[in-house]
Image (cartoon, rainbow, N blue to C red; front, side, top):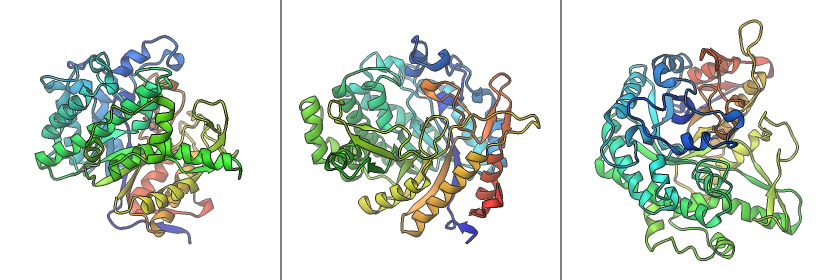
Amino acid sequence: MDELRFPDGFTWGLATSAYQIEGAVDRDGRGESVWDRYCRTPGKVVDGATGDVACDHYDRFEADVDLLADLGAGSYRFSVSWARVLPTGTGPANTRGLDFYDRLVDRLLEHGIAPTVTLNHWDLPQALQDEGGWTARATVERFDEYAGVVFARLGDRVVRWITHNEPWCVAFLGYWRGVHAPGVSGDLVAALRAAHHLHLSHGRAVRTYREQGHPGEIGITLNLAPHSPDSDSDADREAVRLSDGYFNRWFLDPVLRGSYPDDMVDHFSRLAGPLDFVAPGDTAEAAAGIDFLGVNYYQPRVVRATPGHDLGYEVLEGGSGGATTSMGWEIAPGGLTELLIRLAHDYPGTPLFVTENGVALEDRLADDGAVHDPVRVDFLRNHFAAAHRAIEAGADLRGYFVWSLMDNFEWALGYRPRFGVVYVDFQTLRRIPKDSAALVRAVFTRNAVGMDPGGGASA
Ligand code: IFM
């Protein structure tokens, strides 16, 4: 077979997030976010990079929407900056901040591109962090307030909402490992508390959305990964159970089943003490009934039992030793098929979207003025095909968003990893579509991916 056709109505799109592309951090009344503060903390971000300018999308959004249209995107996934809308995280809305997203939504719709909007892609207002951030239960109310303001302004036109992006990263990288904002290190209880408040706030925001009565749909995006043991030993298989519980089930179960997994409650209670921040009824609220689950897939996790490690196991860098990206992530399209089939099996009845998938490479502007990224072309084609295999196996996959529309601020790694299908020259901010942009255009416009190995960017 040399062409894989996707179901009619399948959604194809590209994704970004506010702090990674907007810049304009001090414009039109925007408040400080935890990432502004983290970037200014010496030693936290490679090269001391910040999102102050990023891709200057705030001033260039019209041309960026033209680019999306040129790529044939049916939808665009972007996030709203909480600190633009509520500069201190609460109180009166900043109209000028909301106006920006209003213009962006209208511009997308003029081009026939459906807006998919994430409310929390990590940039919590710093004023709320000063009150404890996601470890404070009051932040649940603040998120619900923020969500309600944004729904009220954009809800008539946004077709798809995502409450949180990758709460695992917010909770465990931000409040335990300290490698993301707000940079809290060594406190597992804080991370578990943060995760719980993210779940609860998700449920509250879903309820608010329903109460406001908008026409679109709402879900959450989780970063998920299939797992395998490094060896057949009982210890490595046990490590897989724990790592899957920590990375996948701790986030899937509350929002889709209304409870935390028993084995992981035992495990975390042994490591961190009683989970007394979980009040009766909380997990039922978290499972507010979503319309879809967003899945961000980048690589599988290969796990080895490691006595003495703080979790009792470690995840092997580079996975099983195959090809890797410039960030050292294993390239494994089969993992996407496995993950989607597992979700369809373990959490039946939930429509799925791949809300992020992509690859960081060291792209360069060539002498011919183009950016040739054959590894990304192959990567995307093989992952699209992997998604197609999952659909054939019964997964209810409704859409696929490529990360990312353009090179951008890759958090603590600064601007070195390039994920875009559009190259950004960070000196001039010029956008140059890479070869992979041609593949994306061909696949998006034909709703099919060609698997002819010599086919390059052909659909
Ligand atoms: O850039 C990030 C994005 O913000 C969240 N998901 C993973 C991407 C690549 O690391």
